[in-house]
Length: 201
Image (cartoon, rainbow, N blue to C red; front, side, top):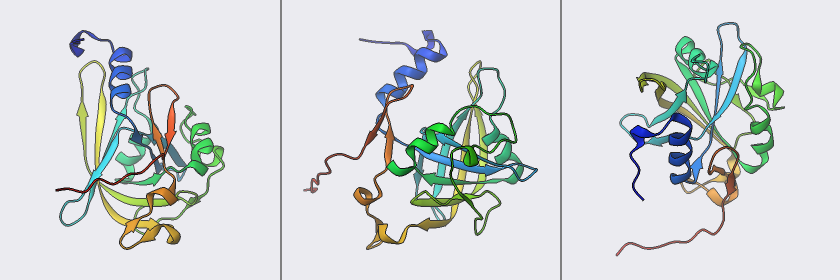
């Protein structure tokens, strides 16, 4: 089958793309607004990569169907920072609960029953229940798209917080961390299954 994406509407394009790129890690992005209200939202269109002097995180924030920008983006534009919280199995129910749309100023972190902790270097809070937090400073926001606008958020990691029992020989024990992955929209997820090793020649 051959498909030209230019002939697809947003919903069709969204579902096809996200069912092809699986599994996707989930970043629970925590931010704070100008009045000190905390905000948390899950994003699965994200990745990270090492650069000099600090590693970078990138993720996509799409606009609401109404055309409004999401609170996450508005808060990042205000504070110029955010925190990436890795989502594990223990956090999943809370993250889904807090993923609904609430009025601006309402804390999804509190609604989800999660705990906001003060970060070391950024204004945005980190989430205590997450096994790994990455405090990030904003580098750039790039607006993408024409009729379906999204924003590419680029940040640099300035501080890691890692649960002590997970950090082994300079790496995180992924099996012990038990991260959750996102599959097809709207509500399919996965857990870590079989892990295997293949050595390079």
